[in-house]
Image 1 (cartoon, rainbow, N blue to C red):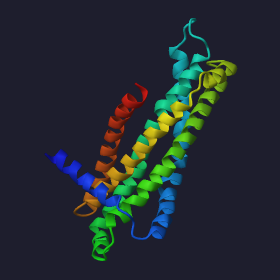
Image 2: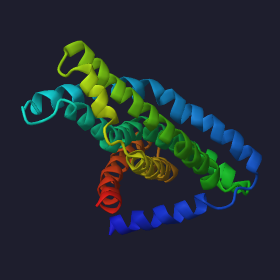
Image 3: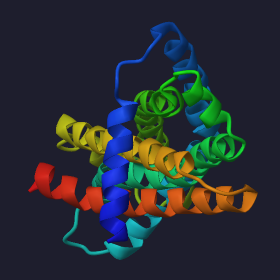
Length: 246
């Protein structure tokens, strides 16, 4: 029964969040602030993970496809497909769920336990929309950009691994990267990223908004936000893959 309780309360909160804002100018400024906090501050870890992820995928693919019947360019092709279809949209979103999700939940949770949200509601402000909607919009805008950067850096990391370790000739690797490239793969990855971005911001906002207690409970809400955001990302990854690719 707890599951249905939380699902129902989550959708009720989401409906309140998506109501028309009272003053658009305030929301525009807040969205820009959240894009900086939630997105640009995550660029460093996204870049580092993407480069090494691409390098590891290239090396492992090379050592596990060492067969005379397989063309050499298959390594570059497999690296490109793995990074674009799965690693960049899903793994980066899981990383952002940990970094960004915990920040959102702890920030809103702290405002709840210090009664700042109660003060907003007393003044007639739609606190749910004011606090969570800018974070959702910022995530929907900035997360796809981070994933596109991750795709580029992941493939570049694979190229560097091929150049340094000589597991595959660079000409063959580059040919595999461009071999039968389909723009739908990138479209599919960005659709997943948008869904994951909404999940991260809304689920984390939910656990922060309904925090009760003190500092200890804020920590618990932050942990729950990361856990349930990650679970939902994995679940919707399966669902979207089934819908879009099958």
